[in-house]
Image 1 (cartoon, rainbow, N blue to C red):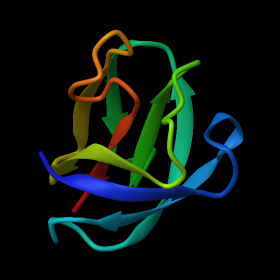
Image 2 (image 1 turned 180 degrees about the vertical axis):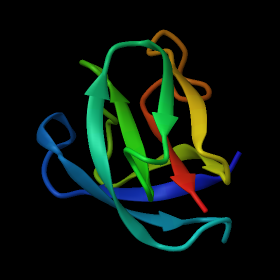
Image 3 (image 1 turned 180 degrees about the horizontal axis):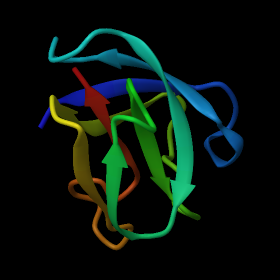
Length: 100
């Protein structure tokens, strides 16, 4: 799973977009929308989020600004993503999808 260096445009709790810079050259630098969502499985549609999206579990904002978060790099029309704030592994404090 690639990781990205993410800088929000405000504190994570109120961020609506984040600049994302790849740490492993899996995708280009970009700006993605940020949404705060409840834990659980989410399907991200390319038609709704053409470049991708950064999801933050509601009430579990990343501790750092900027933060290093996991991302899924997807080439299809949709991608599933699961948030689990009870686990700091995977996407416990947030993560996202980048469509390539």
